[in-house]
Length: 122
Length: 110
Image 1 (cartoon, rainbow over the protein chains, first blue to last red):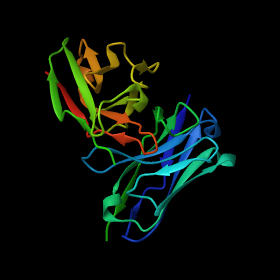
Image 2: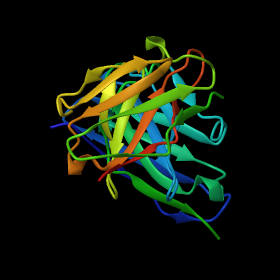
Image 3: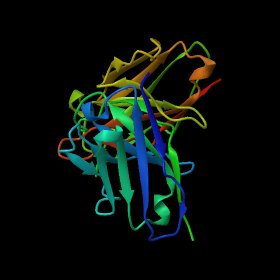
Image 4: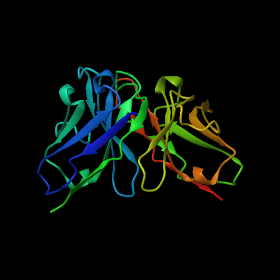
């Protein structure tokens, strides 16, 4: 069965860094694009970043560009999102989601993880 | 960045039919926007219902269907069930730009 499990969420101070992980099981994450999506408390969904199957095409939302970096670890069948210079507005539940295809554009989500919570506060 | 607009809330009677829509600030929505639809119940992760305008996943109940309607993407629920009460989000993909979610529609079955 296909699963995605996020981890790494925590309470951090503004300006600090955090690395989120997305572990895949039941499929090879190298065969598909993966997206990160976040949801601030009581708010809607926001697309954050996407990476193609081979890492050759990566995109970021303007709100995180230059601060967040997404990467793959094929050996661990996982993906990571390094989050630097965190701000209060980055507080959200972060989900990773598998795409049906190898490119993150156009997006065609299928499986979602359960999310990991990031809280940025002093 | 484009803005994607959905109805904030809708109500449907049990067994009834309701259509949720998804509009783009850039103009009419087309198949080229590859519209997707997601369902989210309280305390749960989103679940993908529809991709590429009208394609259901294997887990998507047949009572949900996706289409284009009047320049918007549309999600129609025919024969609403109490368990369909949830938030629904659409997602549009834009050439040379990033995918954008709509603000969501809270659907009440009452």
